Image (tube, rainbow, N blue to C red; front, side):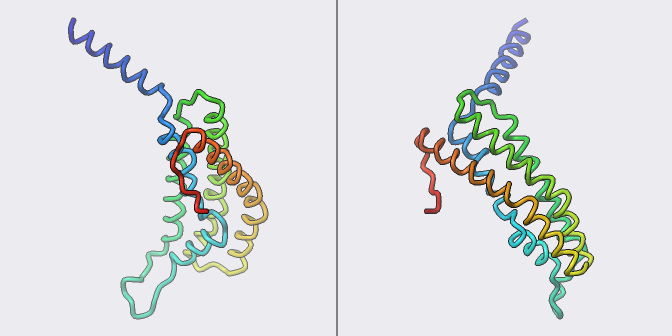
Length: 177
């Protein structure tokens, strides 16, 4: 009987701990600082990175590529974004400021994820298979035209809400000013 009471007590303790709001620092780290995971989203940054993943240097055996390096980079980015999104979705928040910031951060990750899965995956395949410069450029221009304006807007909104949240909770944040 003692064991059963102990198990019930521990289960209830874990349940209530899991449902508690995170500390302001923990919350800020997951919803604002994790946006750094997609800070290189812009085609001129991430596209260039994917292109560089496929570069081989003559007479340098260690630079020999397998032919899927850019695709692996995108796959890793997708996994990272999905994990961040899952972690943010699991956060329990009670105040309106935190709710708004959480929702905006979720919106950001939900906007970049399909672009990684579609356009950047296609671009990575072109990089790995030495596809034409025209095809690659067309994909980067599509991302720039179709995705970047809204993603930049949401990034800015997360930043504004994050700055307000940090000030409200006296978090020591260096905004790079």
